Length: 139
Image (cartoon, rainbow, N blue to C red; front, side):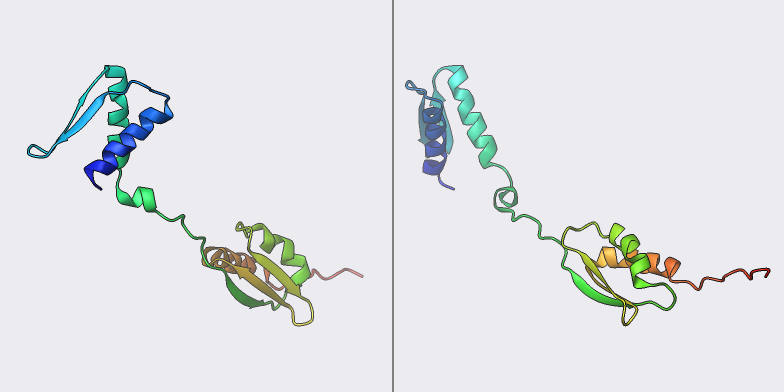
């Protein structure tokens, strides 16, 4: 960034505020100082601009964080019906992009979710996909 960039940013700030009489600013090359003379209230713009320009470059150019990738997994069920646990599995999927489909013919769940969600699904399915023992009736 050059001195001209900085002085232009300061002057643009004054212009945007509608200041017609702005402080005089000059860069002294030997001492490498920016000298400003003017009303104290109008000199605040210099501090504001310099403060904004000294932010770490990553904050100014940082890209938004990309979402976790989705992974597709087929979860076979031994005992539970896919339609019976579908709602429970859907309840642990917090990413809007995640999906679960019950395949009744093969007794499987087809899940597209983040790795973190799939770990939660695995734990849940392990607890729900268990053999149900029916009590004997006294007929």
